[in-house]
Length: 358
Ligand code: NCD
Image 1 (cartoon, helix red, strand yellow):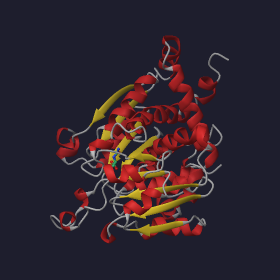
Image 2 (cartoon, rainbow, N blue to C red):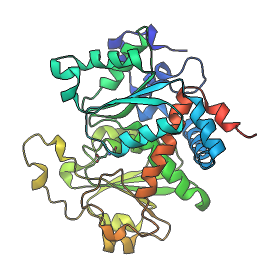
Image 3 (cartoon, rainbow, N blue to C red):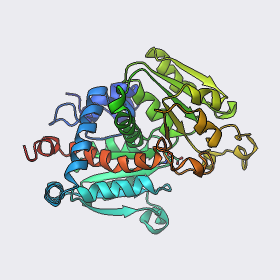
Image 4 (cartoon, rainbow, N blue to C red):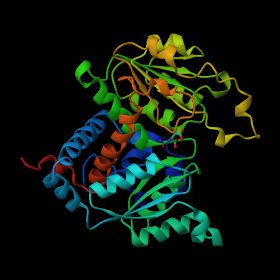
């Protein structure tokens, strides 16, 4: 079993993502992540285990008896939510997941009122959290910080797990987990998540949810991926290189309507203009043809679904909201269940939950 204590930071950092996976596993529980940093840590079997656990938690939480049992499981643990980038859903659904499992929580959302403002490094701040908490859920604009901290903490006297809730433009693994959970639930009674076409539309260049979900979809049989974006915001080569290597069929397009007619799921994203290098560069791109409205709704197959990681701006018209194929509200709620499952699994409570009432 590979351990983060057995490899230097520079050597670890250089490994391809898939090769990092064994180092991030829980040494005591087979095939279970300890730190959750990348989508590359999740294979089909693990995704299905998580979905089963999330289903179980979802049903248990409906009864007082089940909810009280869940709440008792991690009442001896505390979680720190360190979110130095804006967040509503990811923050609140992680918080709700902690509440479901009984963890108590603390948070830093504005570094202007923490010691970072006095000049403390992020590394020192995160090490400080590990003194008081048993889990660190973190969202930061810095690519690689979650990974660096996972290595640091594993090599410290308080090796607490790190859960990446969005890092820079590169990864958002728990969003991809909730997206997969939503797809699995949506197609459960319709032949499952296989032989499907998933269309991504919007800012595919800078959207980290797209990178993570595109990878996770490669775990499922015959899922074609279509990337619809203006040329300046098309999906980056590192994403399509993985698809090519894995023999996954994909196409790039600038025609949303054509793609919608052939899609089982359309995954809309907003323009990520917070990453603009020069002021207003996104505003100069014509995005008018990359929006989902009444016309697109007419073209979407009867069994198709519309997804969005949210927040949305105007890329999905509100007239779509009440259509049964609009999955974005349920997708958001699914986040709470799959994050509960991931946290329970991280602390080794999968079996206890699955066996409840048996
Ligand atoms: C996404 C993010 O932060 O990357 N939001 C989320 O976590 N639900 C997508 C976005 O901000 O557009």
